[in-house]
Image 1 (cartoon, rainbow, N blue to C red):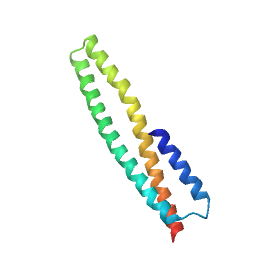
Image 2 (image 1 turned 90 degrees about the horizontal axis):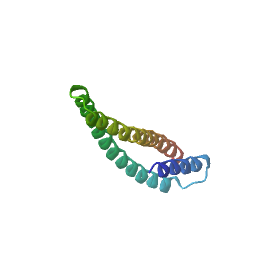
Image 3 (image 1 turned 90 degrees about the vertical axis):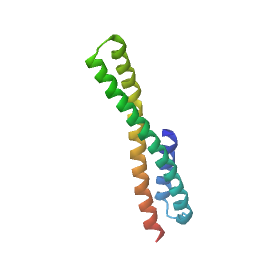
Image 4 (image 1 turned 135 degrees about the vertical axis):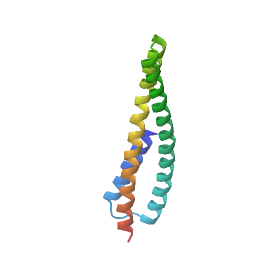
Length: 110
């Protein structure tokens, strides 16, 4: 998904560099793509928050009743949480950039 959103945003940046585009159809397609990426962003937010809560619980368990198993559990969840946070960060920032692209397209349409 990361490559798809980056590729799509660069494609729109290239269109915005041109002056001769059918902005009505580009805007319609862009809004559809934004909705797809917003859905993806929501799903990853839910997963990321779930893993963060699991990490807090595992860390609290490791502190209160330490054993190698609880320490390992907290470490494993943390290792899984880091890529989720990174991926969500990319989705969030790219969707925000797509909003700005939409604003530029809307200004050109008029």
